[in-house]
Image 1 (cartoon, helix red, strand yellow):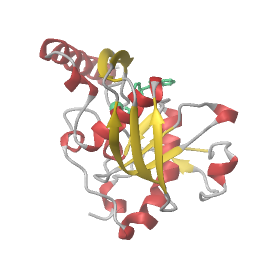
Image 2: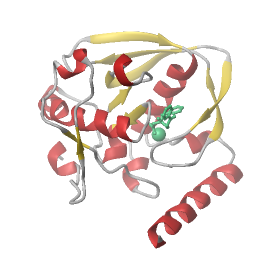
Image 3: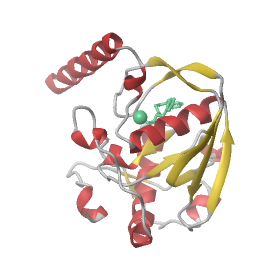
Length: 204
Ligand code: K1U
Ligand code: ZN
Protein backbone atom coordinates (compact mmCIF):
# COMPACT_ATOMS: atom_id res chain seq x y z
CA UNK A 1 0.00 0.00 0.00
CA UNK A 2 1.49 3.45 -0.85
CA UNK A 3 2.47 5.41 2.25
CA UNK A 4 0.18 8.31 1.51
CA UNK A 5 -2.79 5.95 1.54
CA UNK A 6 -1.63 4.08 4.63
CA UNK A 7 -1.79 7.20 6.80
CA UNK A 8 -5.28 8.52 7.32
CA UNK A 9 -4.80 12.26 7.63
CA UNK A 10 -7.21 13.54 10.28
CA UNK A 11 -9.40 16.58 9.70
CA UNK A 12 -8.40 17.88 13.14
CA UNK A 13 -4.64 17.61 12.71
CA UNK A 14 -2.53 20.50 13.90
CA UNK A 15 0.82 21.62 12.60
CA UNK A 16 3.85 22.79 14.48
CA UNK A 17 7.14 24.26 13.35
CA UNK A 18 10.00 21.91 12.38
CA UNK A 19 12.43 21.12 15.22
CA UNK A 20 15.44 23.29 15.82
CA UNK A 21 18.13 20.82 14.78
CA UNK A 22 20.62 21.85 12.06
CA UNK A 23 21.48 18.30 10.99
CA UNK A 24 17.82 17.43 10.67
CA UNK A 25 16.31 20.60 9.22
CA UNK A 26 18.97 20.67 6.51
CA UNK A 27 17.51 17.47 5.09
CA UNK A 28 13.82 18.11 5.57
CA UNK A 29 11.08 20.09 3.93
CA UNK A 30 11.08 23.55 5.61
CA UNK A 31 7.27 23.64 5.81
CA UNK A 32 5.63 22.84 9.17
CA UNK A 33 5.19 19.12 9.73
CA UNK A 34 1.97 17.41 10.68
CA UNK A 35 1.35 15.77 14.03
CA UNK A 36 -0.14 12.39 13.18
CA UNK A 37 -2.68 10.47 15.26
CA UNK A 38 -1.04 7.61 17.19
CA UNK A 39 -2.86 4.28 17.03
CA UNK A 40 -3.88 2.50 20.22
CA UNK A 41 -4.88 -1.11 20.97
CA UNK A 42 -6.86 -2.94 19.75
CA UNK A 43 -5.90 -1.46 16.36
CA UNK A 44 -4.69 -4.43 14.24
CA UNK A 45 -1.81 -2.39 12.75
CA UNK A 46 -0.10 -2.53 16.16
CA UNK A 47 -0.11 -6.33 16.00
CA UNK A 48 0.98 -6.73 12.36
CA UNK A 49 4.49 -7.61 11.21
CA UNK A 50 5.82 -4.82 9.03
CA UNK A 51 7.41 -5.08 5.59
CA UNK A 52 11.09 -4.40 4.87
CA UNK A 53 11.74 -0.97 3.32
CA UNK A 54 12.96 -1.19 -0.29
CA UNK A 55 14.51 1.44 -2.57
CA UNK A 56 11.04 2.14 -4.01
CA UNK A 57 9.86 3.35 -0.56
CA UNK A 58 12.63 5.88 0.10
CA UNK A 59 10.99 8.98 -1.44
CA UNK A 60 7.78 8.37 0.47
CA UNK A 61 9.69 7.69 3.69
CA UNK A 62 11.53 11.00 3.34
CA UNK A 63 8.15 12.70 2.99
CA UNK A 64 6.82 10.93 6.10
CA UNK A 65 9.84 11.47 8.39
CA UNK A 66 9.18 15.13 9.36
CA UNK A 67 5.69 14.19 10.53
CA UNK A 68 7.04 11.17 12.46
CA UNK A 69 9.57 13.36 14.29
CA UNK A 70 7.00 16.06 15.01
CA UNK A 71 4.55 13.47 16.31
CA UNK A 72 7.23 11.99 18.60
CA UNK A 73 8.40 15.39 19.90
CA UNK A 74 4.84 16.64 20.41
CA UNK A 75 3.69 13.53 22.35
CA UNK A 76 6.34 13.81 23.92
CA UNK A 77 8.26 10.60 23.38
CA UNK A 78 11.75 9.29 22.78
CA UNK A 79 10.80 6.96 19.93
CA UNK A 80 8.07 6.25 17.41
CA UNK A 81 7.66 3.31 15.04
CA UNK A 82 5.91 3.58 11.67
CA UNK A 83 3.06 1.15 12.53
CA UNK A 84 2.08 3.43 15.43
CA UNK A 85 1.08 6.00 12.79
CA UNK A 86 -0.49 3.47 10.45
CA UNK A 87 2.46 2.66 8.18
CA UNK A 88 3.37 -1.04 7.98
CA UNK A 89 7.06 -0.57 7.14
CA UNK A 90 10.26 -1.36 9.05
CA UNK A 91 10.93 2.26 9.98
CA UNK A 92 11.28 4.02 13.32
CA UNK A 93 12.61 7.28 14.71
CA UNK A 94 14.38 7.82 18.04
CA UNK A 95 15.65 10.87 19.90
CA UNK A 96 16.65 10.72 23.56
CA UNK A 97 17.69 14.39 23.59
CA UNK A 98 15.50 17.43 23.82
CA UNK A 99 15.23 21.01 22.50
CA UNK A 100 18.55 22.53 21.36
CA UNK A 101 20.44 19.28 21.92
CA UNK A 102 18.23 17.16 19.67
CA UNK A 103 19.88 14.04 18.24
CA UNK A 104 17.38 12.46 15.83
CA UNK A 105 18.02 8.93 14.57
CA UNK A 106 16.19 7.41 11.59
CA UNK A 107 16.14 3.62 11.70
CA UNK A 108 15.35 1.91 8.40
CA UNK A 109 15.24 -1.90 8.45
CA UNK A 110 16.83 -2.01 11.93
CA UNK A 111 18.10 -5.38 13.08
CA UNK A 112 19.45 -6.44 16.46
CA UNK A 113 22.75 -8.14 15.66
CA UNK A 114 24.06 -8.75 19.22
CA UNK A 115 22.59 -8.82 22.70
CA UNK A 116 24.33 -8.96 26.07
CA UNK A 117 23.95 -11.98 28.29
CA UNK A 118 22.94 -9.81 31.22
CA UNK A 119 19.43 -8.41 31.40
CA UNK A 120 18.11 -5.36 33.17
CA UNK A 121 14.74 -4.09 34.33
CA UNK A 122 13.51 -0.61 33.39
CA UNK A 123 10.15 1.12 33.51
CA UNK A 124 8.72 1.61 30.01
CA UNK A 125 5.87 3.58 28.56
CA UNK A 126 4.46 3.60 25.06
CA UNK A 127 2.87 6.38 23.02
CA UNK A 128 0.25 3.84 21.89
CA UNK A 129 -0.66 3.10 25.53
CA UNK A 130 -0.73 6.63 27.00
CA UNK A 131 -0.47 6.82 30.78
CA UNK A 132 0.41 3.13 31.19
CA UNK A 133 3.81 2.05 32.54
CA UNK A 134 5.40 -1.22 33.62
CA UNK A 135 8.79 -2.67 34.52
CA UNK A 136 10.16 -4.54 31.52
CA UNK A 137 13.12 -6.93 31.51
CA UNK A 138 15.36 -6.88 28.41
CA UNK A 139 19.01 -7.50 27.44
CA UNK A 140 21.05 -4.68 29.02
CA UNK A 141 23.05 -3.94 25.85
CA UNK A 142 22.34 -4.41 22.16
CA UNK A 143 24.05 -3.77 18.86
CA UNK A 144 21.71 -2.63 16.09
CA UNK A 145 22.41 -2.39 12.36
CA UNK A 146 20.18 -0.05 10.33
CA UNK A 147 20.15 2.27 7.35
CA UNK A 148 19.39 6.00 7.48
CA UNK A 149 17.28 7.91 4.93
CA UNK A 150 20.41 8.53 2.79
CA UNK A 151 20.94 4.76 2.51
CA UNK A 152 24.03 4.72 4.73
CA UNK A 153 24.40 1.63 6.93
CA UNK A 154 25.14 2.23 10.62
CA UNK A 155 25.85 0.02 13.59
CA UNK A 156 25.30 1.28 17.11
CA UNK A 157 26.02 -0.33 20.43
CA UNK A 158 23.65 0.88 23.09
CA UNK A 159 23.03 0.45 26.78
CA UNK A 160 20.70 2.10 29.28
CA UNK A 161 17.61 3.89 28.01
CA UNK A 162 18.78 3.84 24.36
CA UNK A 163 19.11 0.03 24.46
CA UNK A 164 15.57 -0.28 25.86
CA UNK A 165 14.19 2.22 23.36
CA UNK A 166 15.79 0.49 20.34
CA UNK A 167 14.40 -2.88 21.46
CA UNK A 168 10.99 -1.32 22.11
CA UNK A 169 10.87 0.26 18.61
CA UNK A 170 12.06 -2.91 16.85
CA UNK A 171 9.40 -4.84 18.80
CA UNK A 172 6.78 -2.47 17.31
CA UNK A 173 7.96 -3.48 13.81
CA UNK A 174 7.15 -7.10 14.72
CA UNK A 175 3.73 -6.33 16.22
CA UNK A 176 5.03 -6.65 19.79
CA UNK A 177 4.11 -4.20 22.57
CA UNK A 178 5.96 -3.73 25.88
CA UNK A 179 3.01 -5.30 27.68
CA UNK A 180 3.88 -8.60 25.95
CA UNK A 181 7.01 -8.71 28.15
CA UNK A 182 5.04 -8.66 31.43
CA UNK A 183 2.72 -11.19 33.05
CA UNK A 184 -0.70 -11.83 31.50
CA UNK A 185 -2.31 -10.60 34.73
CA UNK A 186 -0.47 -7.24 34.66
CA UNK A 187 -1.01 -6.94 30.89
CA UNK A 188 -4.77 -7.40 31.16
CA UNK A 189 -4.95 -4.94 34.07
CA UNK A 190 -3.02 -2.34 32.09
CA UNK A 191 -5.05 -2.80 28.89
CA UNK A 192 -8.32 -2.61 30.84
CA UNK A 193 -7.07 0.59 32.53
CA UNK A 194 -6.23 2.05 29.11
CA UNK A 195 -9.71 1.21 27.78
CA UNK A 196 -11.28 2.78 30.88
CA UNK A 197 -9.13 5.95 30.58
CA UNK A 198 -10.11 6.23 26.90
CA UNK A 199 -13.83 5.83 27.71
CA UNK A 200 -13.50 8.53 30.37
CA UNK A 201 -11.71 10.90 27.97
CA UNK A 202 -14.39 10.29 25.31
CA UNK A 203 -17.14 11.11 27.83
CA UNK A 204 -15.51 14.41 28.91
O1 K1U B 1 7.55 3.71 20.85
C1 K1U B 1 7.00 4.39 21.72
O2 K1U B 1 5.83 4.14 22.06
C2 K1U B 1 7.75 5.52 22.36
C3 K1U B 1 8.18 5.24 23.80
C4 K1U B 1 9.58 4.69 23.77
C5 K1U B 1 10.15 4.09 25.03
C6 K1U B 1 10.00 4.69 26.26
C7 K1U B 1 10.58 4.11 27.39
C8 K1U B 1 11.32 2.97 27.30
C9 K1U B 1 11.46 2.38 26.08
C10 K1U B 1 10.89 2.95 24.94
C11 K1U B 1 8.10 6.56 24.55
O3 K1U B 1 8.73 7.50 24.19
S1 K1U B 1 7.08 6.66 25.94
C12 K1U B 1 7.39 8.31 26.57
C13 K1U B 1 8.70 8.45 27.29
O4 K1U B 1 9.28 7.46 27.71
C14 K1U B 1 9.32 9.78 27.51
C15 K1U B 1 8.68 10.93 27.16
C16 K1U B 1 9.28 12.16 27.37
C17 K1U B 1 10.54 12.24 27.92
C18 K1U B 1 11.20 11.09 28.28
C19 K1U B 1 10.59 9.84 28.06
ZN1 ZN C 1 5.70 1.97 22.00
